Length: 195
Image (cartoon, rainbow, N blue to C red; front, side, top):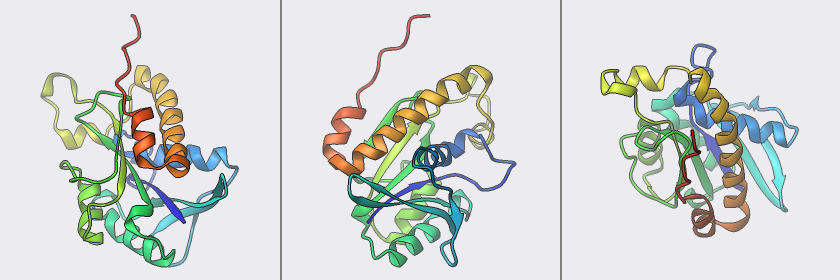
């Protein structure tokens, strides 16, 4: 079984924030497959099972809050008898411009506390992660924590729909093609549209 886990913070206060883009992607995947994410006993996550090209895939959103995501992910892997190599984590990245996707098969947390929590809980860096660029706050005066927890502005929201669609396509390709081939397809930097 493959696991696709979107990171974010639960609750209405955080809904639609930049930090919750992982949730937005998993929500879109679930909607695309006509399933609803539901709470499951002892999983610390909202989950839904889907079939993709003959592969069983578990979609999940931890409800432990971002900084404790590892607890939920470790539980999900154990309950589903899956290895770290079967895991794709989807999260935000301030160091990438808005909309840029970066898929990797392993690596450090890069300062992302959700990823760090997962690395610590699994005692492994050997899992795939799809980072989605949210950009940095303009002017650099705003605190990073305040920025990531803020909602996308009106102009950004128009782009986020396409970004989420592309991230969904990337996650599905990861299940079918594996990490290396999918990296070659989705890690390319796109040209900025003419203004």
